[in-house]
Image (tube, rainbow, N blue to C red):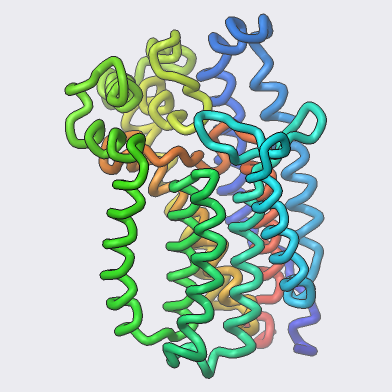
Length: 372
């Protein structure tokens, strides 16, 4: 580690990609929300001002995290996970947790609110990276390695599902599975888990009528065009007319009270309508480039902990973007998760930028420095 203490500059390509996504997000939040802002708050700039504030706070936090040595998080991994579990339990207490969109997923703090499940995603990635780096020799063992990790992951997943928040839970579980795979878990264990997972997923859907409605709306949204199929239909109505070049920035028709809350989960639909196929493709390319830089940072990371941490953060961002965009274009049922860096949101945007700050710090300890 002596040579690695001579830190290099952070990954500037990742910073450029992030800056473009963040600026695009602020522009599109304003473009998609000013009609709703004027109607709900008599202030066309309401969402823009809050998003700019969240982005500013998030960038400041990202820079702060970028200068904290990545191995510091390993020292506090247990404490971080414990706090995340406490927050997940607090949000379930009536009067403490706030209900929005049918999910009790927020805790109000003054004029703002935080979403504990966002903290859990990052907290579990840090803890799992620490655990797997310390006990990697046991990961091929079902009883000593794989099952204890699964117990931890699905305990967190279960608490998130009590809110309920299937989208965030899916991102958390899939991210952790990728980390287990990279750490060297036995493939046969994944096959067994996949079978159990399919049965469990069907059970989760069948246990809640609104999830069944989301599935039927996904299969045939026009069966209930004014009810459960309304949101996806309006999303497709936005993307379709966009064509190759789009209707032009600010010229969306669907944001005029057709597509509900267009600045959040379905902001990609407004991007497709206003900026067309080219604009949407550019956003997707930027997320692929983000994943590429994350993988590169992981491959050049100095130790197993930093490698797994980089893999976890990169996978989390890529999975969330992939699931959100897939929902908007009608490939999978509605899950209710935001598009990283672009959707309106406080704790989601801030925590995502904090995650990138950790990734940038890992890039400063690249193994390529050993040859310099």
